[in-house]
Length: 148
Image (cartoon, rainbow, N blue to C red; front, side, top):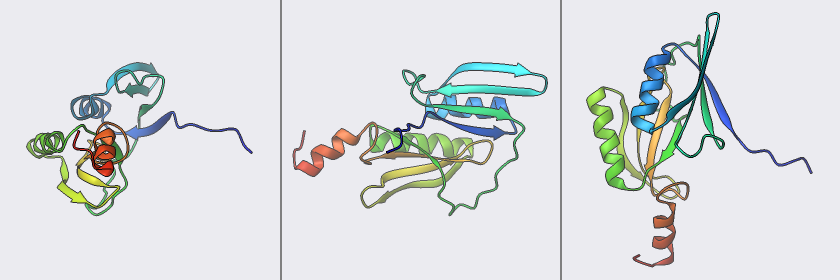
């Protein structure tokens, strides 16, 4: 049996580094944890607080803008602690002009979610009620029939 592998990062080429760093700070709460420059290359590492050694986004300049149709569901997924938090992110995104999918409910295991477009065209989902990340414990309690 091969050794167990664990995902540690996703690397993305982006056209506007500053805009992408600002987006992932504002909407995802990620922090810039490393940045380096060499010649024409800039590489930025971003992580959620406390997950700097677990999972990061590596942003590299020199990409092309993506032009995904609204019904293309490839995305990065972030879990939130409540439906209200999904609604709040969706409202912020609508105000910023980057909301792609308004909040909606889907059957298990999808839950309640909305989708945003980052400055490079990647889609970012914010969800509540999936059996992953924050809010998963609430889902588990509901499945077991416990109100608390």
